[in-house]
Image (cartoon, rainbow, N blue to C red; front, side, top):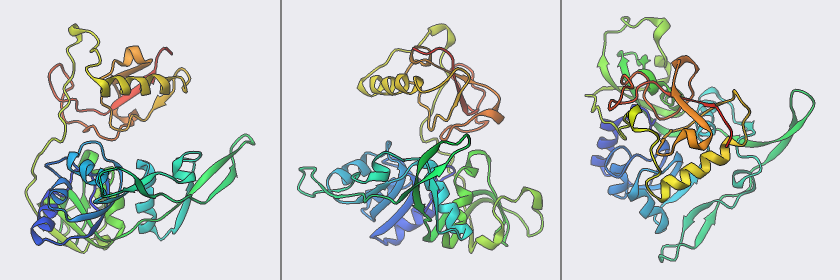
Length: 320
């Protein structure tokens, strides 16, 4: 179960070279066709995937639609919490995420037929649910999710010591910490290996008690998808293709659900759509108030033509 942000590329390459196959992989995403878990899809070493975001890997897509792999899709926050609970000894928890959808009722495709007809031969089962009281006296349906552990957990850290204490950098803290606690054997790939006792205890994100192996490996410094700030003088960008049109439609519909002043978790924001036309104003603001999954904190200045460093904040401005 590798973490997505600051991917343990060297450990994934080592697994590829070992040739071990029929792997069940838990990851927040499946990499691209060339990087991350894409290396293991290329060699056919993965047979089952539990993931939240699978939209960047054409090799994965082809294998899934051709019935070569089994896939369980899990909401991003739920996936992280399932791993955190595994490390904390919590067998299950309830969440409103997914209530009333295929996550709760079942029927989400998990495997297609291998004959190319794309017939669903395995679908997700229904999940147990329960109604709980909400503040104010209302009640709502909650879905039960079970903890998710693995035989091995692979993480990437900025610094580590021989005792296994780890310090992550920026968005590497999104998923690496819960992943590190969820494996029977945790292997940490670190950019800098420092002497034991040299890390400030107040800055340690993963205590060494969770880590079984530490490997010093070079940082590959890969950018999965480079996003550049638009030139303000150019005006709003028009939708360029069917995917952009669909994305804008989704954002327009989502905008109807919010009140003025609400803040939105954008996930992995890709504003090929115009936030102004969609009813959402996307802007770079105070990083302490931002909620976004896939954008690097502090990776750039955010100026025109430069990588967008601070995470995105979306605030409802005018409803369409």
